[in-house]
Image (cartoon, rainbow over all chains, first blue to last red):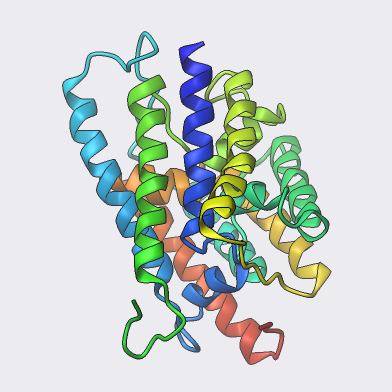
Length: 138
Length: 149
């Protein structure tokens, strides 16, 4: 029950943060990527705020044996750079630039602007399914 | 507050929203020991991935993600959002974001917020790569006259 409540609070705070910061506006997100045009630096401030809090959280995490409501931490351990990581990130960036949407703001926007976001979300899951079905990946 | 030369930027709102996003990710990390990566959570919630948090928690996180904007709108006023008018941009964008985030093991939240703050070499490389390819994409689309405003 603790886990469910914490997760609901975290999800809601995340969604509220996206809304307040203007990151649910694809035009503004795209503005950050429009470095050679009408550049909008807002996303850099969003990243700055989020990184500040998370940097402190990682310092606290290192001193803990386990999280508050679970028996152990479940964190990625690999540090290896490979073609999958960089190729996947490159493809993601192209989609991000075309649409102005990434997964967080897209899901957060479903209740706000269903018609246009549904197209993106449908394609998002189709892309994830395609990745799952392909035997050889990058 | 505005930044000279960038009249449309929202540095204060952006920073405050960023603090909330960071707080959300910190609750996931210190509360249940998980990375708040939305692409992974979305894949998990829909059964497209076996990794990550228990499926029930993934679904709860996404429900919170949809509730949050309504709370913010009630306090802060309506959410402004301009979407690309072209349906193909939404479809192609969604496909590339879905495939790319699975292949690259993360998106803006997982790599950009959680991984970079941990000084993960993988996440810093991924974030620089997707910002770079996004900048190139927008420059090309604008040059071809496919921008929107």
